[in-house]
Amino acid sequence: MTKTIVAKRLPIDPGPAAWKEILPKQKRYPELNDNINTDWLIIGGGFAGLSAAKRICELTKDKVTLIEASEIASGPAGRNSGFMIDLPHELGSGSYQDTIERDKLHIKLNRYALDFALDASKEYQMPKEAADPVGRINSYVNKSGKNHNQEYSKHLDQLGEKYKELSASDMKEVTGSDFYSGGLFLPGCLMLQPALYISKLAEGISNQYQDNFNLFENTPALEFQNNVNEWIVKTPKATIHTKKIIMAVNGHAESFGFYKRRLMHVFTYASMTRRLTDKEQKTLKGQKSWGITPSDPMGSTLRRISGIGGDRILIRNRWTFDPSMEVPIDRVKKFGKDQDESFRKRFPMIKEVSMEYRWGGRLCLSLNSVPAFGEVEKNIYSACCQNGIGTAKGTLAGIGAADLAAGINSEIVKDMQTYDQPKKLPPEPLSTIGARTVIKWREFKAKAEL
Image (cartoon, rainbow, N blue to C red; front, side):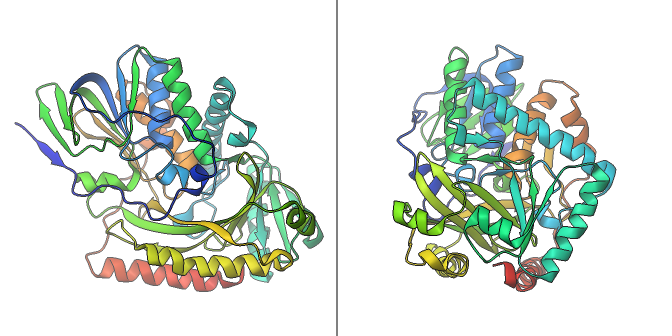
């Protein structure tokens, strides 16, 4: 029986992908204009899709094709804050903790993803800032945040994980700011320049496996149709015949009819400063490069970067629930005022520094904080729904989907298949009202850390 799957919408990303904009021009790839045959088709060129591509190319000499709806690093992969986190850090749950045994397994798997990224960065000779194992700080500003960090440190003790407590003066030495009361330094985090990492990963795979790997940009998948033992995928200007498909499109899995009413589409917002002048850097003091996650997950995430794109500061905060997967650019500008205020509160000594870029990024969460993973149709495999941790979880999902499709029962596959399916959302309008109420309440509770 013939089955047709039609994409009901295509990705729309508000504002520029700043990480990509501050880079020198990266390698670009052609749009697919001719009909082709391939053994594997990967849809999506982010962390999941490129990790899947590399894994398949390592496993087989089959022909592998990857299509990206826009340009590499222009979508969510180039819009995150660049933290590849090894420790428990579940945005959808309202905390960073789970059970001890479960967390130990997740730490092990997350570190597999970190090792994958580090190995790729060395193999493809990426600049150090593409994937730098410098750790992160979980900060706090008041008693509530301090209590959270103390509970978190007890949990880390149970896990046997290392950390270092930082005082207010330690935080000032790192950031140059008096804003923070303290923090926990967590050494295992890998800090990415996400657009640089993704761009160089795509280039490295393309060069290493040029005989059997092809990548096409500006080539969205519009329709699938099965035909005996293959799928026929239509794009705007061509048709692809393929044996297997890996969906690495995160929340857009629902756009193709998979996991209907089981995925929550959330946007978060960020601003990045212009380059800091030498005088501003001397006035600010502090270290040249650092990353801060807030003790309350809904607070402000900050990074200071110093590299190819200059010395800059990034602030990410504010969240919205948007089932349509589209947000107006005016909202990006509106929330930019909040990021300006967050910047001035932390860095009054350089308050005249302006933001050069503002943007929004898509996240996909499930109500029960589980991935959308597995074979969703014969020979179509989903590596979606990373629950706000796309760098590590996306990498794992891509590798796991490749293993599953290749018949390899790896530890990643075993773990991914232990989860229930994403839980069905309440009917509308209750779903949207409920989600937006929860976000507002959690942002209110995190007000001190915004």
